Structures are given as C-alpha cells and as structure tokens.
Image (tube, rainbow, N blue to C red; front, side, top):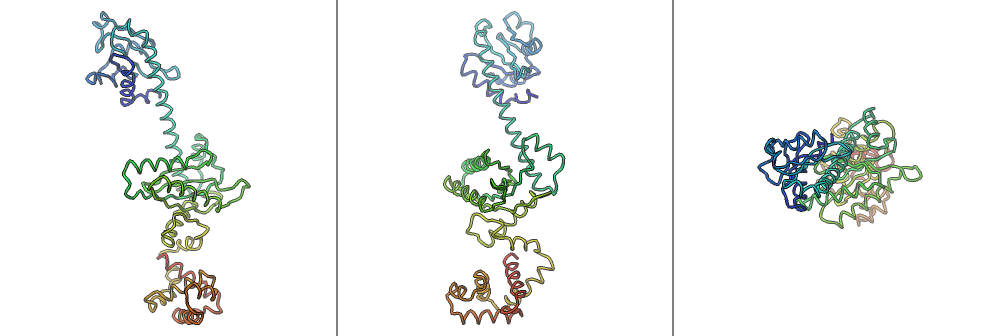
Length: 386
C-alpha cells in the first residue's frame, strides 16, 4: 500500500523541507489521522481531528478559531490530503490563519507529494534490488530451476534462459575506515551493475560478492578469455579508485539444470586453489587451474590417501624440499630436461641425478611409464592442496 511509504522519518523530512519554504508550523498526519511528523515535537503521536475531516471529505479543510473549539488536537490552519496516483496517503497540515495559508497551501502539498512519489520510487528500486539479490542467492544454491524461480525472474524482467557463468569476488577492506570502505563498495556495486553488462549481482557475505555474467560472446560461444579481460579491467578500475583490495575467480560454464550452482562452486574452489598456488595474483580462472580444482573434490577421501602415498615417501627423505622443487619445475616445463635444467640453473646431469633419486624414493618409473608420471603429477597437485 502507498501509505507504507509515509513513515515518521519521511514525514519529519517533509516537515523540515516545507518549513524552510513557509513561515509556519507543519504537521504530517498518517492515513489514520495521527501526527507522525511536526515542527512541534510534543504534538507527535496525537490524533488530529482536522486531519480526520480532510480524510473523510477528501479535500482541503480549513480550521478557523470557531471550529477549533469543537475539535480535539487542532489549531487554526488548513489540512490538505496528500495523494499518490489518486489515493490519499496522508494529510499535511499548516498552522496559522486559514485565509493567509490558502494561497500557498496547495503548492506546499504538491511539494510534499513529490517527495512522497520520489520515496516510493526509491523504495520500489530498493525492493527490486533486494529481490534480484535474493534470486541470485537462490540460484547459486539450487540444483534445478523451480517454477517459483522462473515466475520470480519473469516479474523482475530477468531472462533465466540466458547462459551465465559465476564469478566470485573476495573483498578485503584492510585498514580502510568504515565510510571509505562503504563508498568503495558502492562504487564496486555500480561498476558491476552497469545495465549493458546484464550482470546479476548479490552480496553473499561481508567479504564475498557473486556475479552471474552472461557466458557467451556475440557469436554465441563460451569464451573465458574475454571474460578474464573484463575482470582485469574491473580490478584496474578499483585499484585506481582507492584501497579496496579484491580477488576475483571465474568459474566454469555449464548448461542445463543446476548450471549456475555448479558454476558458483567451481568459482569458489578456483578462488581457494588460486590463493594457495598463486597468492600474489588477484584474478584466477577455472580454465587455468582445472586439474587442481577438480582434484579438490577428493580432499579427505581414501582415494587421496592412496594418490599422495608416493609423495609422502618422497617427503620423508626430502627434508629441505629440493627434490619436490625439482619435480615441480620438471612438470612445469613439460618434462623437458633442457628447459628444466636451465630454469633451475643446474647441469643436465644434476637434473638426471635428482630425477633418478625421486624415482628411487617413490618407486615410480619416470623414464618409461606415462602412468607413473601422471600418478606422481597428481600426487604433487594433491600435496599442494592438503
């Protein structure tokens, strides 16, 4: 209902603004005739019978000195109904000689109605924003679309058939003051909610925002590199604006039921793994960390215990981590001995010795067996995340 927009805070704001225009006391009454805003604070909460007359007649009511004697809680003046879309939402009362107030009473009432209309529109926008956020939070936790979600989206003008991918933003306001942090968060929200981007944005917690971005490019293809450029641009813009530190992880694109929830989970895991592997970076892409992200689902399982067994044997003897660092460099350079030796600033013979030592300690054949190489690579990846 419209009268719900007229609360005591807004009523007092209307009083303050109108009393700067006219030299008389102003009262604001609700749709039941009670004073909820006034230049005379002692009158707040009183029933104003002049307002009741204006409500019942639906027009301006003049209260002269004679009528005052017969009404409770009134002083001489005029009372005018305030309307939105033709519906009376409250009464504005001006205290003084009625004949002197008539000429500008309607103008003051129009000013109050404009403030009410603006408040209503802002409230509707805020409600729309909250409903959009609630829908996003619902989608990232749902394994399938329900009829309620579809109807919900339709009412908000959101096309759930548009393929989307989830990005998770981790926020660190650091030592910023509260006001500064809030201002920069608002700027971040504005950048994310640019209409042409068609993003769906929701605050998950004080330190996390999720963004559901359109997944496909103009040619209708999934292009994670394009979205990564958008993320880098956002990071650059926020870096230039102030001290708000962000980390962003882009999840994988899925289709079908539960696609958004799966995309969100991959984005969360990508952020977790990215921070572990590359703590100096600020953006992470599922496509770049696919294997460790997928392996993360094995965390704590018996399969993980079996897979990391060779690495555990190696760690017992490799107390200074030299052999593991050699192994990581070897895999990073696609098991190419020349490139690996160059990166480690060692001779090829030294590299050969270390690899033979790793094979001896793990019991795996790194020269001839692809399966053993793969097993050791997976063990290394899992060891990094445990």
